Amino acid sequence: MQVRCPSCGRLYSSLIPLTCSCGEPLGITYDYDNVDVSAWRDRKPGVWRYRELLPDVRKVISLNEGGTPLLKAKLGEELGLNVFIKDETRNPTGSFRDRLITVALSYGLPYAENGFVVASNGNAAASLAAYSARAGVDAYTVVPRLIESGKLNQIVAFGAKVIRYGESVDEGISYAEGLAEGKGLYNVTPESNIIGLEGQKTLAFELWEELNPTHVVVPTGSGSNLYSIYKGFVELMEIGAIEEMPKLIAVQAEKCSPIASEILGVEPRAEPTKALALYVKNPVMKELALRAIHETDGTAVMVGEDELDLGQRLLAGEGVFAEYASAVIVPALLKLAEEGYFERDDRIALIVTSSGLKGHYSETREKFSIGGTKLDILRLLSERVMYGYEIWEALEKPLKYQAVYQHLRELESLGLIDESHRKGRRVYYRLTDKGRKFLETLSE
Image (cartoon, rainbow, N blue to C red):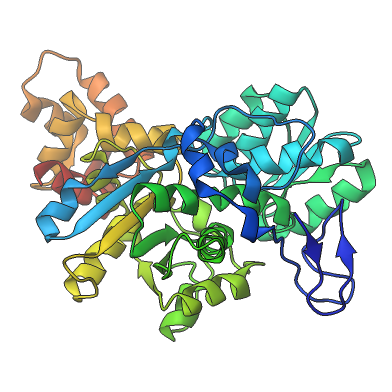
């Protein structure tokens, strides 16, 4: 591994920043002429299978990350296309960030005087917490106030220190950098550590070995995963394994689209989205992500909030439970297919970056587990506005009418019903748009 500034020629060998002191972005290169890919076949699957193209480390801290399944998608058959799902939920902590953390933490151990720190909207923080526990070192995680409960539970369970800071991960990046300097911590934040990106690029190596795709569809927040995959394919070209780059397709939520909007030439938005892992208002790696898209002749797609549940359901139909930030890939695929973007013999890889188990548990129960009396109440309210006693009579079930009010309160807390109006002491309830969409989901 060598890191030399392409502008001023300065050589870096230990603590490697994102940019040289002269201001030029840095990149890690290897002795590509002496890489023998045939040696990979004799090693077990996983990130460290590709060690010739990874930084040298004294000790590998691993939880057997990488080597995730590639599944032929039934959805592709319906579309008349060759579609495959790269299921990164099968990594140790349930996300692609395990690839980054195993490399960043293994490399950083000699420099982590008092432990590690990461700024993250959840996945990298959960991963650092697990790998730090494995290594027996302290971990500090800077996470935004808007974070899914599943990810927070992981971080706490692994014993990492949690610092809630800012609304989005953008605000936490500089805070983590200051914490690293002040406390003697090694910073593995993806936007601040190019070493970790080397681990993420192994996704490209696996895709090449399994499929050699023509298109790769990537959920995109900060742009680090998209750029990492790009770097992996660039290196495959360097060693002569491929002759042509796959087209990289960035997918973002309409509500937060700083990268996709530039590709598509529309006004960007930077608002909170249900796909919280994609809520990155000012991505540090935006220019690198844009370069990856342009140089592979790729494109970008924006997905609306109302399409996220569809994406999650269709992936669940494939046997993959993905968080909203991953589910965006399915409506993106459908849009591009409808536009005639793909050819019939293309090989399309969809990257599922993180598990749905990391989401808000109440939301998960709502979408997959509501039944019985609550479902009956929703169906009654889909026909007309009703009050509690009236609902109890219409249910014709052997339960106390007080129990109906408990169900109503729970449905109201989930946002599936709300108060329509009052008449005297009677409170009338109606179905919300969210409740109506939920019922439509069940009938599809």
